[in-house]
Image (cartoon, rainbow, N blue to C red; front, side, top):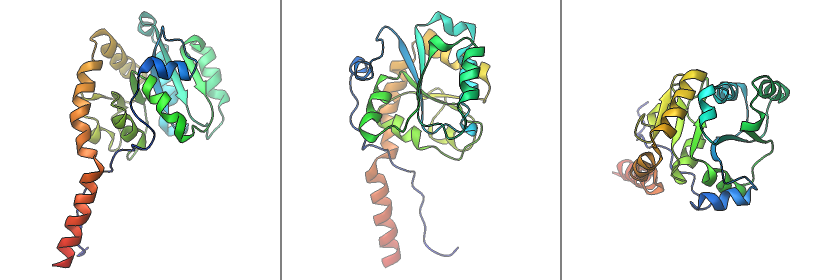
Length: 213
């Protein structure tokens, strides 16, 4: 407990490529550019709340938008219950599932096509997905669990909501009804500066200098 220590947040994951045109990303993934897309990215486990997001997509208000959800990542549990839920909710036309490991060179396409990255977690500490979203300057919708709200200021770069389908749907509707994208993206450009790699190296240097004194 007596050892010198400093706090610094985890930097951006910036090795997946550059921010690019959304339509170009859609074309790379052979998706219809007449739609807008939300992104759920990463390994699919129960605590990540994909079921909550699927129920939110079934909200009748979502029918007002030309909107689809892209689920990109491997299932680390049985995927059949999710597929059955999609059928039961009658949202097959709203959900695109890419059930595979996403190699580094393809990650940029999924983030570049998205209007917003959604992390409807039921429990969490932190998530690396937020640091990828920051790199690609994408608004985020996260749930109020763990430390997610610490790096996604509500109403500034996205939304922090309770882990409930209706609250997730409320935020999605607000995003499109009030055209929040440009506002959030402009704020992200400033907010992401907190997570530059130089911040971490400066902290390491300071810690080293403190120890060396």
